[in-house]
Amino acid sequence: MADTKKLNDIIQSKGLKLEFVAKSIGISVGSMSNKMNGKTDFKLPEVQKLIKLLDISIEVANEIFFK
Image 1 (cartoon, rainbow, N blue to C red):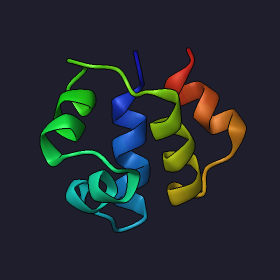
Image 2: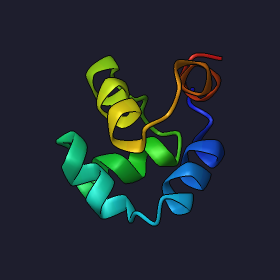
Image 3: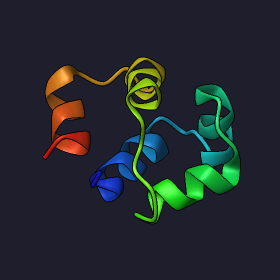
């Protein structure tokens, strides 16, 4: 399960909205909401897009998605 608090903190620190992030990684706002609320997991292609979109390091990505 992803550390969605840390992910949300990064999204907010970049000044982005969840709706924009969802569209940017190719998922619906509802799907993004489910993932951020821990109802479903992020898929690897989504994680890869988030890493690029949010410009986060592999180390930080590991802390968020693979702990």
